[in-house]
Length: 290
Image (cartoon, rainbow, N blue to C red; front, side, top):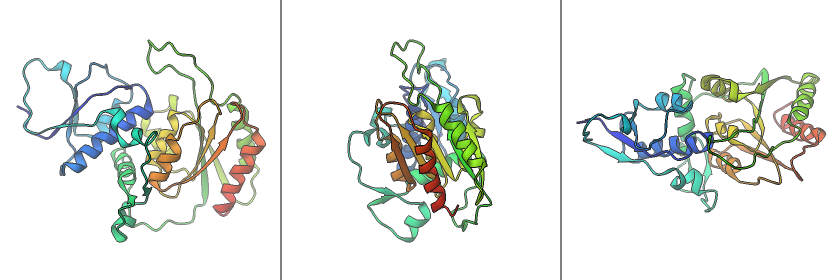
Protein backbone atom coordinates (compact mmCIF):
# COMPACT_ATOMS: atom_id res chain seq x y z
CA UNK A 1 0.00 0.00 0.00
CA UNK A 2 1.10 3.55 -0.82
CA UNK A 3 -0.44 5.81 1.80
CA UNK A 4 0.70 9.23 0.55
CA UNK A 5 -1.18 11.12 -2.22
CA UNK A 6 0.26 10.04 -5.59
CA UNK A 7 -0.11 11.53 -9.06
CA UNK A 8 -0.35 8.98 -11.88
CA UNK A 9 1.15 10.58 -14.98
CA UNK A 10 1.13 9.42 -18.60
CA UNK A 11 3.78 11.18 -20.68
CA UNK A 12 3.56 11.45 -24.47
CA UNK A 13 6.28 13.77 -25.87
CA UNK A 14 8.61 13.01 -23.00
CA UNK A 15 11.78 14.27 -24.74
CA UNK A 16 10.33 17.65 -25.82
CA UNK A 17 10.59 20.57 -23.40
CA UNK A 18 7.28 22.23 -24.29
CA UNK A 19 5.27 19.03 -23.90
CA UNK A 20 7.14 18.12 -20.72
CA UNK A 21 6.27 21.52 -19.25
CA UNK A 22 2.60 20.87 -20.05
CA UNK A 23 2.95 17.63 -18.06
CA UNK A 24 4.58 19.51 -15.16
CA UNK A 25 1.77 22.05 -15.25
CA UNK A 26 -0.93 19.36 -15.35
CA UNK A 27 0.63 17.63 -12.35
CA UNK A 28 0.88 20.94 -10.50
CA UNK A 29 -2.76 21.86 -11.28
CA UNK A 30 -3.95 18.38 -10.23
CA UNK A 31 -2.29 18.83 -6.86
CA UNK A 32 -3.81 22.31 -6.43
CA UNK A 33 -7.42 21.51 -7.35
CA UNK A 34 -7.37 18.47 -5.04
CA UNK A 35 -6.10 20.70 -2.19
CA UNK A 36 -2.99 18.68 -1.40
CA UNK A 37 -1.06 20.31 1.42
CA UNK A 38 2.32 18.96 0.34
CA UNK A 39 3.94 18.14 -2.95
CA UNK A 40 2.68 14.71 -4.02
CA UNK A 41 4.60 11.68 -5.19
CA UNK A 42 4.61 10.94 -8.93
CA UNK A 43 4.34 7.58 -10.67
CA UNK A 44 4.84 7.38 -14.44
CA UNK A 45 2.36 4.86 -15.85
CA UNK A 46 3.70 5.12 -19.42
CA UNK A 47 6.37 2.90 -20.92
CA UNK A 48 8.91 5.63 -21.68
CA UNK A 49 12.46 5.52 -20.43
CA UNK A 50 14.21 8.09 -18.25
CA UNK A 51 14.74 11.46 -19.94
CA UNK A 52 17.14 14.34 -19.11
CA UNK A 53 14.17 16.46 -18.02
CA UNK A 54 13.44 14.05 -15.15
CA UNK A 55 15.74 16.17 -13.00
CA UNK A 56 12.98 18.76 -12.80
CA UNK A 57 10.28 16.19 -12.03
CA UNK A 58 12.40 15.17 -9.05
CA UNK A 59 12.88 18.80 -8.01
CA UNK A 60 9.18 19.67 -8.27
CA UNK A 61 7.64 16.63 -6.55
CA UNK A 62 8.34 14.48 -3.49
CA UNK A 63 9.47 11.42 -5.46
CA UNK A 64 9.36 9.94 -8.96
CA UNK A 65 8.80 6.23 -9.68
CA UNK A 66 7.98 4.08 -12.71
CA UNK A 67 4.99 1.74 -12.65
CA UNK A 68 6.88 -0.62 -14.95
CA UNK A 69 9.47 -1.10 -12.20
CA UNK A 70 6.99 -2.31 -9.58
CA UNK A 71 7.69 -5.94 -8.76
CA UNK A 72 4.22 -6.79 -7.45
CA UNK A 73 0.73 -5.46 -6.87
CA UNK A 74 0.58 -1.87 -5.63
CA UNK A 75 -2.48 -0.15 -4.11
CA UNK A 76 -2.75 3.61 -3.66
CA UNK A 77 -4.72 5.05 -0.75
CA UNK A 78 -5.06 8.38 -2.62
CA UNK A 79 -4.40 8.24 -6.37
CA UNK A 80 -4.89 11.26 -8.64
CA UNK A 81 -4.95 10.93 -12.43
CA UNK A 82 -3.09 13.88 -13.93
CA UNK A 83 -4.64 15.32 -17.14
CA UNK A 84 -3.12 13.98 -20.34
CA UNK A 85 -0.63 16.24 -22.09
CA UNK A 86 -2.83 17.15 -25.02
CA UNK A 87 -5.73 17.97 -22.67
CA UNK A 88 -3.92 20.50 -20.49
CA UNK A 89 -4.86 24.18 -20.71
CA UNK A 90 -1.39 25.07 -22.01
CA UNK A 91 -1.98 22.84 -25.04
CA UNK A 92 -5.73 23.36 -25.46
CA UNK A 93 -5.18 27.11 -25.59
CA UNK A 94 -3.43 26.70 -28.93
CA UNK A 95 -6.71 25.79 -30.63
CA UNK A 96 -9.38 27.03 -28.23
CA UNK A 97 -9.72 30.56 -26.89
CA UNK A 98 -9.04 30.80 -23.17
CA UNK A 99 -9.92 34.39 -22.43
CA UNK A 100 -8.04 35.33 -19.29
CA UNK A 101 -4.97 37.43 -18.66
CA UNK A 102 -2.23 36.75 -16.15
CA UNK A 103 -1.27 38.57 -13.01
CA UNK A 104 0.84 37.69 -10.00
CA UNK A 105 -0.74 35.82 -7.11
CA UNK A 106 -0.25 38.86 -4.87
CA UNK A 107 -2.10 41.14 -7.31
CA UNK A 108 -5.00 38.71 -7.61
CA UNK A 109 -5.17 38.34 -3.83
CA UNK A 110 -5.42 42.11 -3.43
CA UNK A 111 -7.80 42.61 -6.38
CA UNK A 112 -9.90 39.47 -7.06
CA UNK A 113 -11.02 39.16 -10.70
CA UNK A 114 -12.41 35.97 -12.25
CA UNK A 115 -11.20 37.10 -15.69
CA UNK A 116 -7.59 36.93 -14.53
CA UNK A 117 -5.39 34.02 -13.49
CA UNK A 118 -2.35 33.63 -11.28
CA UNK A 119 -1.96 29.91 -11.94
CA UNK A 120 0.99 30.25 -14.33
CA UNK A 121 2.66 32.80 -12.08
CA UNK A 122 2.31 30.41 -9.14
CA UNK A 123 3.62 27.56 -11.27
CA UNK A 124 6.65 29.64 -12.25
CA UNK A 125 7.27 30.42 -8.57
CA UNK A 126 7.12 26.71 -7.79
CA UNK A 127 9.76 25.97 -10.45
CA UNK A 128 12.03 28.76 -9.23
CA UNK A 129 11.67 27.64 -5.60
CA UNK A 130 12.36 24.00 -6.54
CA UNK A 131 15.77 25.07 -7.85
CA UNK A 132 16.54 27.26 -4.84
CA UNK A 133 15.85 30.69 -6.35
CA UNK A 134 14.14 33.31 -4.16
CA UNK A 135 10.40 33.91 -4.41
CA UNK A 136 9.34 37.09 -2.59
CA UNK A 137 5.89 38.27 -3.60
CA UNK A 138 6.09 41.42 -1.47
CA UNK A 139 9.47 42.56 -2.74
CA UNK A 140 9.48 46.00 -4.36
CA UNK A 141 11.57 45.84 -7.56
CA UNK A 142 14.78 47.84 -7.28
CA UNK A 143 16.46 49.72 -10.14
CA UNK A 144 18.54 47.32 -12.20
CA UNK A 145 22.24 48.18 -12.44
CA UNK A 146 22.87 45.70 -15.26
CA UNK A 147 20.22 44.47 -17.68
CA UNK A 148 20.71 40.85 -18.73
CA UNK A 149 19.55 40.17 -22.29
CA UNK A 150 19.13 36.42 -22.72
CA UNK A 151 19.28 35.09 -26.27
CA UNK A 152 17.92 31.53 -26.22
CA UNK A 153 19.74 29.60 -28.92
CA UNK A 154 18.01 26.91 -30.91
CA UNK A 155 19.56 23.67 -32.12
CA UNK A 156 17.71 21.55 -34.67
CA UNK A 157 16.86 18.21 -33.13
CA UNK A 158 14.81 15.06 -33.41
CA UNK A 159 12.41 14.70 -30.47
CA UNK A 160 12.53 10.93 -30.78
CA UNK A 161 15.07 8.57 -32.40
CA UNK A 162 12.32 7.09 -34.62
CA UNK A 163 11.26 10.53 -35.84
CA UNK A 164 11.21 10.56 -39.63
CA UNK A 165 10.31 14.18 -40.33
CA UNK A 166 12.33 16.85 -42.05
CA UNK A 167 14.28 19.23 -39.83
CA UNK A 168 13.86 22.86 -40.88
CA UNK A 169 15.68 25.79 -39.29
CA UNK A 170 13.45 28.35 -37.57
CA UNK A 171 16.08 31.09 -37.94
CA UNK A 172 18.51 30.51 -40.79
CA UNK A 173 20.95 33.27 -39.74
CA UNK A 174 20.75 32.88 -35.97
CA UNK A 175 24.51 33.31 -35.51
CA UNK A 176 24.49 36.53 -37.53
CA UNK A 177 21.61 37.93 -35.46
CA UNK A 178 23.28 36.85 -32.23
CA UNK A 179 26.62 38.49 -33.15
CA UNK A 180 24.90 41.73 -34.24
CA UNK A 181 22.92 42.00 -31.02
CA UNK A 182 25.99 41.22 -28.93
CA UNK A 183 27.99 43.99 -30.63
CA UNK A 184 25.08 46.43 -30.26
CA UNK A 185 24.80 45.60 -26.54
CA UNK A 186 28.51 46.16 -25.97
CA UNK A 187 28.32 49.60 -27.61
CA UNK A 188 25.30 50.79 -25.62
CA UNK A 189 26.37 53.84 -23.64
CA UNK A 190 23.26 54.64 -21.59
CA UNK A 191 22.86 51.31 -19.78
CA UNK A 192 25.14 48.46 -18.87
CA UNK A 193 23.91 45.47 -20.83
CA UNK A 194 25.02 41.88 -20.34
CA UNK A 195 24.29 39.77 -23.42
CA UNK A 196 23.81 36.14 -22.39
CA UNK A 197 24.41 33.26 -24.79
CA UNK A 198 21.57 30.87 -23.96
CA UNK A 199 22.98 27.57 -25.21
CA UNK A 200 20.43 25.64 -23.15
CA UNK A 201 21.12 22.31 -24.83
CA UNK A 202 24.57 22.41 -23.20
CA UNK A 203 23.60 23.83 -19.78
CA UNK A 204 22.36 22.05 -16.63
CA UNK A 205 18.70 22.80 -15.91
CA UNK A 206 19.53 24.89 -12.86
CA UNK A 207 21.83 27.12 -14.93
CA UNK A 208 19.09 27.48 -17.53
CA UNK A 209 16.70 28.57 -14.79
CA UNK A 210 19.30 30.99 -13.43
CA UNK A 211 19.66 32.64 -16.83
CA UNK A 212 15.87 33.04 -17.09
CA UNK A 213 15.52 34.22 -13.48
CA UNK A 214 17.88 37.18 -13.94
CA UNK A 215 16.94 38.21 -17.49
CA UNK A 216 15.37 41.61 -18.18
CA UNK A 217 14.68 40.61 -21.79
CA UNK A 218 14.43 37.12 -23.30
CA UNK A 219 14.90 36.80 -27.08
CA UNK A 220 14.64 33.69 -29.20
CA UNK A 221 13.36 32.08 -32.36
CA UNK A 222 10.15 30.12 -31.97
CA UNK A 223 11.14 26.80 -30.38
CA UNK A 224 10.84 24.68 -27.28
CA UNK A 225 13.60 26.58 -25.45
CA UNK A 226 11.29 29.58 -25.10
CA UNK A 227 9.03 27.49 -22.87
CA UNK A 228 11.35 28.51 -20.04
CA UNK A 229 9.53 31.86 -19.95
CA UNK A 230 7.04 29.98 -17.75
CA UNK A 231 9.54 30.58 -14.92
CA UNK A 232 10.38 34.19 -15.83
CA UNK A 233 9.93 36.90 -13.20
CA UNK A 234 6.99 39.32 -13.56
CA UNK A 235 8.93 42.22 -15.15
CA UNK A 236 10.63 40.18 -17.89
CA UNK A 237 10.03 41.25 -21.51
CA UNK A 238 9.73 38.59 -24.22
CA UNK A 239 10.81 39.06 -27.87
CA UNK A 240 10.02 36.14 -30.17
CA UNK A 241 11.36 35.82 -33.73
CA UNK A 242 8.81 33.87 -35.77
CA UNK A 243 9.49 32.14 -39.08
CA UNK A 244 6.64 32.21 -41.60
CA UNK A 245 7.04 28.42 -41.84
CA UNK A 246 6.07 27.87 -38.18
CA UNK A 247 3.52 30.31 -36.80
CA UNK A 248 2.03 29.06 -33.55
CA UNK A 249 0.80 31.03 -30.52
CA UNK A 250 2.56 28.98 -27.80
CA UNK A 251 4.71 31.73 -26.31
CA UNK A 252 2.42 34.68 -26.98
CA UNK A 253 -0.23 32.83 -24.96
CA UNK A 254 2.11 31.82 -22.13
CA UNK A 255 3.25 35.45 -21.89
CA UNK A 256 -0.38 36.62 -21.85
CA UNK A 257 -1.39 34.10 -19.17
CA UNK A 258 1.62 35.14 -17.08
CA UNK A 259 1.09 38.86 -17.62
CA UNK A 260 4.45 39.38 -19.33
CA UNK A 261 5.14 42.07 -21.91
CA UNK A 262 5.42 40.28 -25.27
CA UNK A 263 6.71 41.37 -28.69
CA UNK A 264 7.09 39.44 -31.93
CA UNK A 265 9.04 39.87 -35.15
CA UNK A 266 7.25 38.00 -37.95
CA UNK A 267 9.57 36.99 -40.78
CA UNK A 268 9.01 36.33 -44.44
CA UNK A 269 10.70 32.96 -44.56
CA UNK A 270 13.28 32.16 -41.88
CA UNK A 271 15.82 34.96 -42.39
CA UNK A 272 15.87 37.88 -39.95
CA UNK A 273 17.43 41.20 -40.94
CA UNK A 274 19.77 41.88 -37.97
CA UNK A 275 19.10 45.63 -38.00
CA UNK A 276 15.36 45.05 -37.65
CA UNK A 277 15.96 42.92 -34.57
CA UNK A 278 18.32 45.55 -33.14
CA UNK A 279 15.72 48.27 -33.72
CA UNK A 280 13.06 46.25 -31.90
CA UNK A 281 15.37 45.46 -28.98
CA UNK A 282 16.45 49.10 -28.83
CA UNK A 283 12.82 50.15 -28.51
CA UNK A 284 12.25 47.64 -25.70
CA UNK A 285 15.35 48.80 -23.83
CA UNK A 286 14.26 52.44 -24.22
CA UNK A 287 11.02 51.56 -22.43
CA UNK A 288 13.14 49.99 -19.67
CA UNK A 289 14.96 53.31 -19.23
CA UNK A 290 17.94 52.71 -21.50
